[in-house]
Length: 288
Image (cartoon, rainbow, N blue to C red; front, side, top):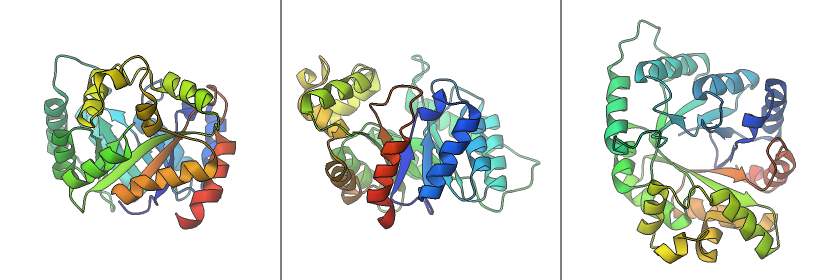
């Protein structure tokens, strides 16, 4: 996946900002030298219009949907939107697709495979983009990672450990893209850092697919329940000073990730993480 660099910004911040502030924020990130920004689809922003807005506000930054939920729109409209963005902003948009957990009556793997079939079957009268659509799949387990390898450019992993990155690379093989999100917190006090991390991770430590992911990584039921053990929390949220956090983030690259999307946590909704992004940029962007 060319152009994203080794590190990017992964953020919920724009869910809480008006459009004008979103524009200023992403333009400042681009001026700092960040080459990629990842945005979710969860709290209200629609994935493809969100990506289009950020692409229009910037000149060369890559915008990655992390992820666009397959239950949010029919496959043909996702394909159509991605087609337009690929045409309008060649090589700058990455369509990250994910199950999203909206339905319990369908298995994620089957749902994703069927969705990709529908996307690939679309016959569009629109002019073909000079740069092809780039898509990746949210993937944790072996079968979804295999689907990402075979039916997309690669995978996006969210709230995973460095060990998971190594396992994912083995399944994906050497050529498929692997983008990994990781949460970071600039807090030196272990008790404060872990309390903040547990608050951030609470919903993920009780959801079915995330719990299965942690079990596959070797964590016991006791380590996953009751807010998570220190070992699990420390593996999922890197905390401390900038040097400590950066060193741990580089562990994902050593384990086989192509790119790490950094999610800064610990800032209240509506409060920009920009000061922390600047600190990360000073440490990471010279080698990005």
